[in-house]
Image (cartoon, rainbow, N blue to C red; front, side, top):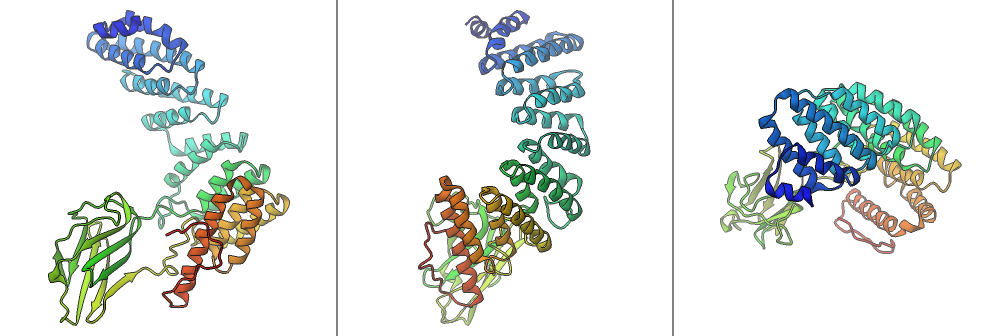
Length: 424
């Protein structure tokens, strides 16, 4: 109460710092007092010399270390430490790295400490290869370290970027990492850390949003655009532009539900002048992202509608979990996982990975085998039956769409499939 009274009275001095020490030393999660201490430091910066501020900051860091011993996962304490280091005249970043090492030895999954370490690394210009070596040491000591596996996924694309796929790594490094992660899940198949990292290794990069389909309806005088990712479009956006017969059209965009939140589908009403029943054809072209992405379709005389959509087979639309470019790598991983599954028949992570690998390799060839693995996975993990049934339904719907395209048909038969949800 005295500290709060001092703040109200504007008493921003060293005595106020000392008084708040007692409270924060017992309970470091008192956010108001950390704010008060920052106000005091900002006030003292105007009055004290750089040498005196350096001494004050050193004392503050020592106090913060005591608070972290009370609660190593205190949000307020770690945040205040970042603030002090940024206001310290001569910060000792090497010592902060040592502090992180000390706390990660105590609890290697302390994500507060991991966040602080990334802050220190960024400010002190530590080389990514040094941090990768640090990650190596932690994983070698204990495979069950999700934070360290995740850290590798941030470091490796910086050190070994794949020139063809943003956010991915070169094949040489990929194969080395696959060996490492296989050692991890063969050592402890039930630990999820390595399995998540394995999925990242075989995953796709983050592709930029693209236009999947453009549809024009003559009767409704409307145009619809379907994207690969949810996007935000302002009603009178200059990011999404429509041309009718090479002339720009003034339109207003909306989502099907009218909420105009980021979504896959955006609609607009076309000007009546854009459609003439007597013309042999109309060409509509849609541009997105300053023209980097575009798609057009042609509406012929006498036709009610027209569309231009990506091929779900050629564009690999449904293979979004894992990459498909390196099929030999995927096939090798599938064989390794099947070997492990023979040893650990009820391991849910192994069963799920097998399903995703088969889906990435060829969803139709492996369809029946995938369904058998789904049955085994539901038996091994009954608490997640509803999720697995929905995932199974999603895959079956996608397979039906693939079969429809291969048959050059516009009819999708979803009967007798035991679906529990409708996706897409």
